[in-house]
Length: 268
Image 1: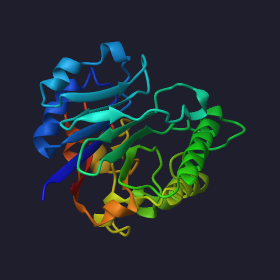
Image 2 (image 1 turned 90 degrees about the vertical axis):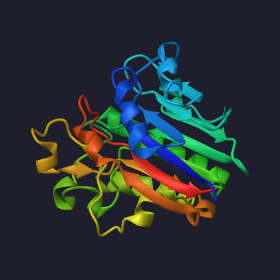
Image 3 (image 1 turned 180 degrees about the vertical axis):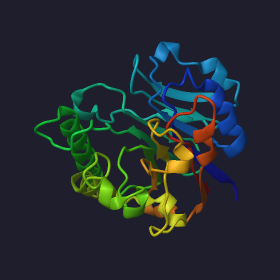
Image 4 (image 1 turned 45 degrees about the vertical axis):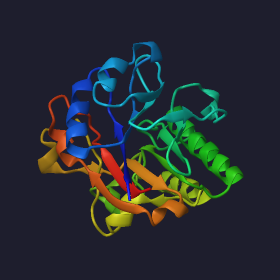
């Protein structure tokens, strides 16, 4: 039975880190790569370089300097029409496509707002935006009902579980692990009846990180990570999951992103 390998990665500038995609392809052999924070307007996206890596099908939604999402695929795809413009900001945080596989497969690539540094809606408009974004996404999923033949992934900028952060106690007041964010993400997950592909294989009792801050002098030694990047699958695909990988070594690459690529594999 053929398999499908899907990777999500906050690349933190696709033009700056285009050479690192070669390493990603070598190490994970993905069929589909979903990027966030491409920081690139559509007309400047490096299509030629990506095509040279064996991804002839591409969908991009970007803007100058920040945000931006892209889907790179070895499989034909069609952009989903009519998905929301979250919070009416037009800020390129979501791209939905349908992959041309048997039975079809909807793929949603998200870049959730980071939320700034102060976890207070009234004092921090960025945090308010994050909570509003999550509320809209939850309502959208509730209106659509449980997901079917779908994958939802990306940099969701929340580490929901106790062992998704280096210190649950110390992180409770830090944006990305506050109770209000964790509750909001759980509501979104429940609204679509989404299944956590990484925790399908890695028990919640084990530490699991996908992001390490640039601020640490030695990120590996400090190991103060967070699991901000997620892959969720609809319940009808949960039984087809056959593997996952967090490419921790990528954090040590030259000119690395502070996020590392995350992969889920499933049988078609």
